[in-house]
Length: 277
Ligand SMILES: [Zn+2]
Image 1 (cartoon, helix red, strand yellow):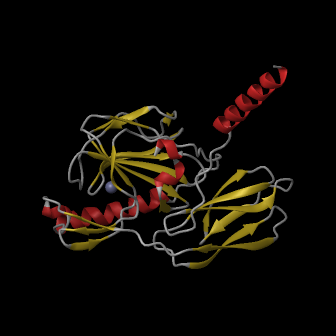
Image 2 (image 1 turned 60 degrees about the vertical axis):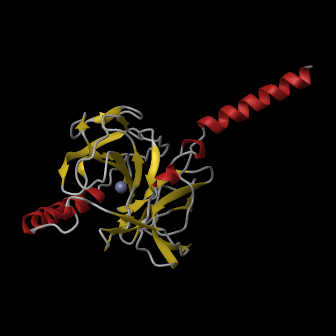
Image 3 (image 1 turned 135 degrees about the vertical axis):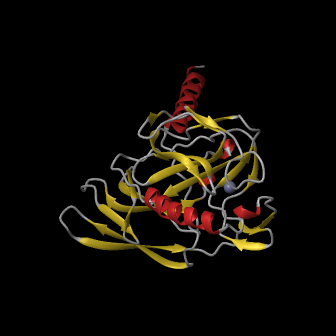
């Protein structure tokens, strides 16, 4: 009987441990994936790590400092490397291999033709917003990253990350996020704790919110019908930040959810527990 109680206590301990342990994003060495790479033993000082000149997120693992690196959708298969600068100014490289991955093609028809072939006035706006979005993606705050994401709204997956897009028979950029089909007005939650770094209305994304989760990890919520938060506001994980809509370039009401890491859009599903996907 005593043995039985011990065994049950042990099982409960394990379950509890698994629930509270740091859930990393899944390691996925493909364009649009995330590379988790041990860079320095933990007993050393925290190093400074860059990938293609951009600083990358670092967390303390069990025995090492771990770099959590976002791989661009445009990354070429082959050897990639991180530059590691130790506290004593010594530098060294760490390589990793990016594998080829063929994302599927998605064909969509957009009724508002100006959203596919924008007129001159819209083109000027798109250009301005292109630089704004680029600047936002480069946000890097020194707080440790909050990585345990939850799905920001419930609904069917209607467009996976990375899909090669053909809009009205014309080739466009690959899909930089995950689409969740949901009726207009459904509540949208913050995937993790963070700070609001931008809210506004942009040509393609419509009403949009950018959250900074620390160390270059950002999330974006697009096509919203309502925004409930303000710039610089601190939000908790799961806090209601807006409502689903179809503003911007959208075929119908849905949430477009993007995750950025060191400036690159990465697959948001890598940050969700399997059961939560
Ligand atoms: Zn989308």
